[in-house]
Length: 599
Image 1 (tube, rainbow, N blue to C red):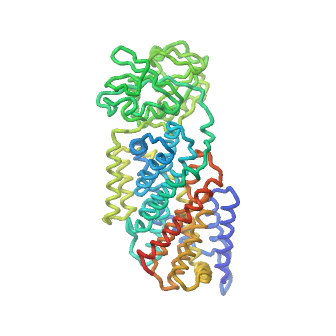
Image 2: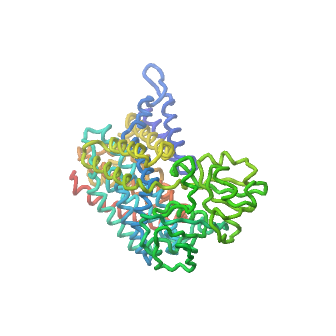
Image 3: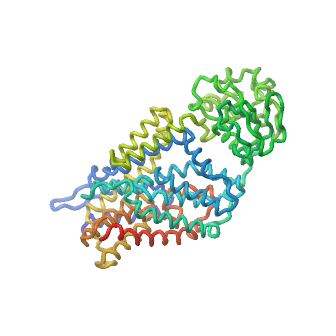
């Protein structure tokens, strides 16, 4: 073993140890390992040199097409989120099942389909709140639904080239490190679709028994603030002519429809079959999260027309909570008489007063010290009034920017165009994603600030640094050594070698991260296949499947970590259902891949 290979393997062992046994963020660990390789002294015939790899080799991963595509896709998904496109898909697909198994089916099939054409990490991020609220409506614990949400996104991700960052990273490595033609949009579908079908069937059959019954910590907390909010059904709303049940306004989590005002009369006992009419004024009582969701519901608008008189478009605003102080000039005056909008360049949408139901229109409510106001204003409102004597507390509400529902069809059309361009091979996946992201911004499906903030730089740094480590493994000769070890264990049989490559990649994925695992294993797998003079395609497909098939631990795949808290899970919950799931997916992939691409 050469000195450079020994140094690379030592750094790799250090990186693995830090990732497994410490809580240091993966991006910091991988960049640290890359830095060590840049400055480690290595012997030469005439002396010493600094660094096992050059700066170009270390940071070349940050220009990898797969990594860049992942970053651009965050912007595309932001456009879908800000227009309510994802909300519309979720509401249309979920429905109201009456058993856990039917609820699982409602999650699995739409999420698998959605994650096939969208990067699965942002999909899970957007659907966690929707599934959490849905679980409340169905009176199910989130632990029955959150792991299936993550697993369904993973299964969908292995059905196309763009479904997961792992596939994009491997596709980028195929371009830069092999002589093979670029991977097609649906090359992996030959293996991924059978795996997705088998995994979905397993979850449907065994999920209800293997998933724990456990509430999340957040679900155990109650919000004492009960707001009174008013919404109007405008003319032309898609809710006109629908019953309360059909409109999804019955069994609202954390709130209820208390009253409907219609043409000067009040309907106090609102039944599920009551049909909504244009200009109905709906009065809701509930907690802040529920009122926030009502503000984003397609077909309803705030009852106060003051929101349309602020000096910025609604999609550039945000919701805030503010507590009225005893020195506030608005105390003792109604919201209308005190000219709240003119005074603060903000609009009151709802008022909470110690759990009391306030039976007045928003503009007629006389404010008192201690009232909590739900306010719509420009993003700088909290900063401007943080030290004001008018309010005791001002806090922003996350994910409360009003949706741009009128642009949802346009956002969905842009998404469809991106998929068609990439699938047809007219342009590369990166170019298609860049065009889609640019159109999302140019058509105002999302703003520039939202586009900038949507990119998860931690994920991109992990990918880029892991690719740098992979280059070091290959360039130092460590890949050949490790490939020899794999071949030694597997013998000269290509199928046993394929199994060994899959198992090693899967184990690394479970203890590291998916992108780091495939970046580290790619040169090893390719070297092993070349030494056997075997077809590279089955090995590449096994890397893509094994790099995503992380079901047995929460740390191997980002979506598993994302649902850990909302589901109230323990580490062993993943092992109980995920280990048999992983073995089943592995067996399916290892059976199908050699049939599609013979050795």
